[in-house]
Image (cartoon, rainbow, N blue to C red; front, side, top):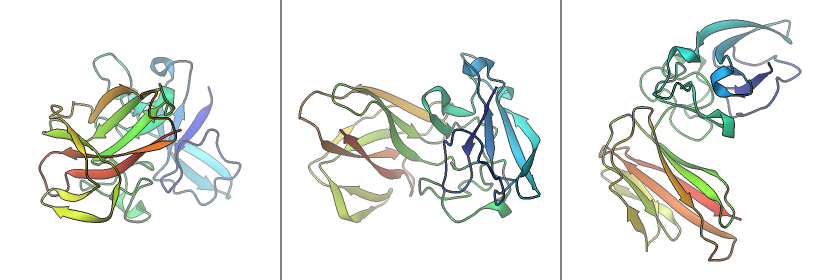
Length: 235
């Protein structure tokens, strides 16, 4: 089965195939996924890559993703690897199991703070309060809004604005960045045990594309509960 290099731990992610040279990779921050026809039979492994002679890698197993499963028996390493979503779930053995001395900068590939909860996560994605969208972003397409946070966190709400403010507005829950008029969807309950709340939706056929949908989530009532702005680009 092929190995897919899914987290380089710097600014790259979701690369299919191992690069011809592995020189310069940080051996303490990589994730390889051994992909099969289905996730449950994939033999998923997390492996550190040891570098020698600039281009030769020796794989050193760290742990296996099938040590932790959710209710339907699926591996809990990534949110939805079958559809290319390699964000890590809360139960992932990658979370809080890295080496803090290997941190290359203060933010992950999405701009979330590195070493969010004391110990750095393995891979390019740091588990942290975040909002993103996956799916078919054309008119009539099926999408999934994904709200990331610590399990049990509430309240949860999703703001949809008419634009993005040129300057953020400080609030007691973080920086609010959406232009009025806006609408709030919520309360949406609590973040589930895997750390990812999924909101399925179907994009309307009108207005005609292209158009943008700026969104921001509130996950909890702490000083950093307002997430990043996610701009859904309907094309």
